[in-house]
Image (cartoon, rainbow, N blue to C red; front, side, top):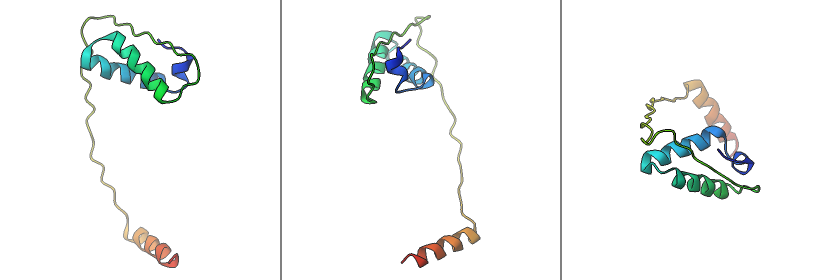
Length: 91
């Protein structure tokens, strides 16, 4: 739970993600609260700032692994010629 000083500088999902990462490292809600406050201050919050992290289990959250997909990017031959022409005319 966080007041508007937290919500002004990060989304709810961002706060949840930071909290999950912190809990996976040390499983300490007090340290998580401090880290959220630090992050909000780094992001220059200008409002009052209160954060409370409540854990409903004494176990740390499970690790979340997001598979990385390989994205291949390329430019077509036509696009390459257009780009080359645009660069050549600006010299």
